[in-house]
Length: 239
Ligand SMILES: [Fe+2]
Ligand SMILES: [Fe+2]
Image 1 (cartoon, rainbow, N blue to C red):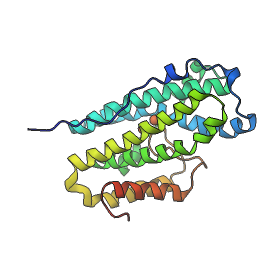
Image 2: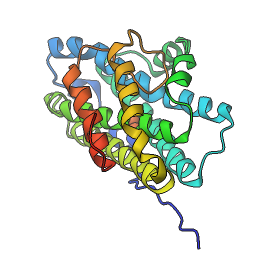
Image 3: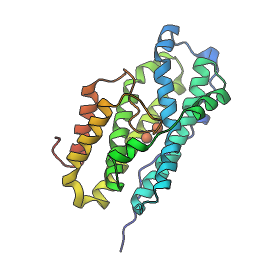
Image 4: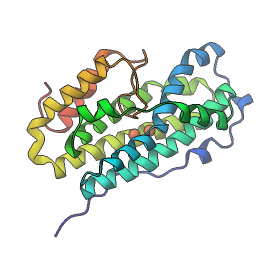
């Protein structure tokens, strides 16, 4: 009998959590806020771009496995929840209306051409998504202190819930690899190396959700360590 794949998840509602926060209650220093403004925007934009990536995946008309589809559906709804939360947060911190934020996000061009050269099938897509999710999860964890500095308990809870979701996404895509693509594990080192190389050298984020780390927030070592952790999770020796 075929066993069903259940991705790990913990449903919650970002707008319910952040809905009661009023801008006057935020006590984060102005200097810190303006320093982090591009990083907040980057996080918000990449969460928004999950839907663009989803539409791109749909357009590929690949014969995705049931396990991959289950992981992706859950990922899609979590990322949309994150987008709504980040949009509210950005509105609260920078006094821009949510409509204006959405318009600016919509106006950015997307380009998936390079992505289609880096990953070509479900196995490689899982590795790309896993790599991206572990980098995002670790990145958000580094931001915990910043959210604490805002002095709002629900901001604290927010970033911890988001980081937990990203860690779940990571583990879910790893599980898809280990259950559906076990026979291709020996190829993982080469694919992960290719993804890492692209991430370290690409100059510009193309609004593709993945490989959105073009800010100066993280070092090269940070990404190398993410790739190594991914290989260890697959039971493989890092390159
Ligand atoms: Fe997210
Ligand atoms: Fe995620």
